[in-house]
Length: 202
Image (cartoon, rainbow, N blue to C red; front, side, top):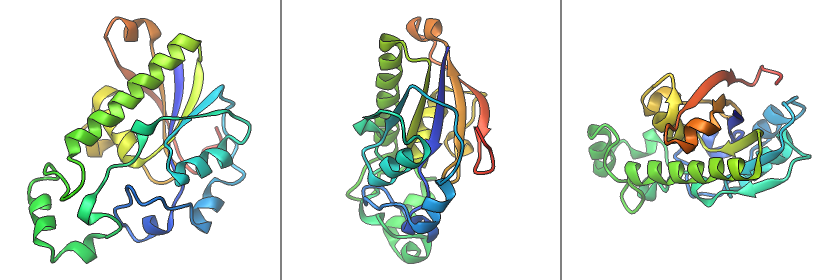
């Protein structure tokens, strides 16, 4: 079995205002740094991380000793014209209302479509698991984005939930386990072992 700690990055300035922070390369805010500082995490062999600054900083705080491998596919969604804005700032925008009315299925104007984004994240996760199997890693961490976690867990998570059923707060996530044998046979399932919260000492 491969044990994976799948964790959302710490809080950024834009997160505190509920903004759509995707391609904006924000660092952690002071609150986000404090959230992750001095937490005791399980020892891992390797950390896979999104190339965004907020994820790299979070990995440095949570796993300062660990070697990191960046997975470009783990980047957060490109929210296009909605980028770095929140609901209050967008509520009079007709394109935003169309997106809301579509139940969040339309592509973001000048950004990614939800399906493109989800598939990209899943492709990156597949690459990561294949690397773990090939190099015999058994206990790793992933420091990524909320949307990345939701995309992966919607596809592979057991018990099954829809995309929004896997939402996590900043600094939180899931411990999941993957059977190498099942993965090689095409039965790609990620069994949730436990939730990771800010109060948990792992």
